[in-house]
Image (cartoon, rainbow, N blue to C red; front, side, top):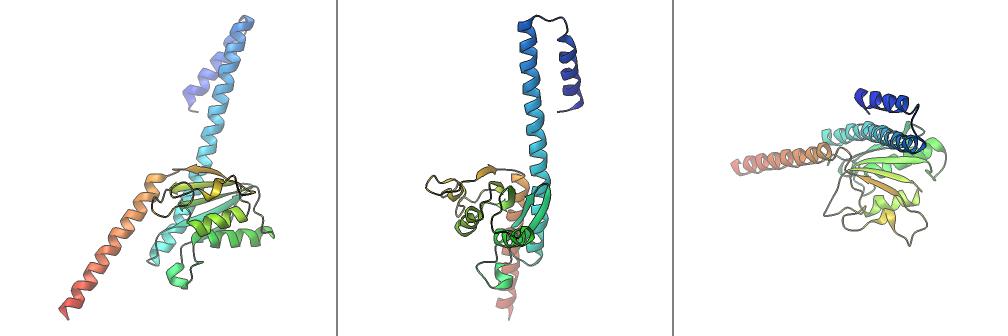
Length: 205
């Protein structure tokens, strides 16, 4: 809600004095709608704030020439777990951003259950990470860019919201989508250029 919206709210509230009951009910309804919009705006601002933190983690992976994927887990307004892709660096399939963040968050809370937490990740989770999110009982997941070829939070299938499981997650998609997508596109473009130069150097020998 901007300053103008706030003034309109004040004006409507003031004008309610002397209104008929019907008019007063209508104005009250309008005030409730604005209040809901304000809550939604704040909600999204928090999502953007923490997605930016996940992007910072993704850039750490980029520096290692890893696919730039980052993740943070938030509990009571505090980041309690961070992770970024290190699969090639650590030579392990388990080196995904989400897995690392979940391990660190569990260590912080002293519990494998990450209830009342929100997980932010720059790229839609794979089947392994989506499964780990469900197992960790994380109630809310916020995703930056979707992954049409391998994503398991709505693209290929949605492991985060399956009726057959005893836990289902609320999923928010597309937060800072452009930034997350552009980061991946730029990374792969640079990677292709590096490989091209290496091939040319190899042919020169």
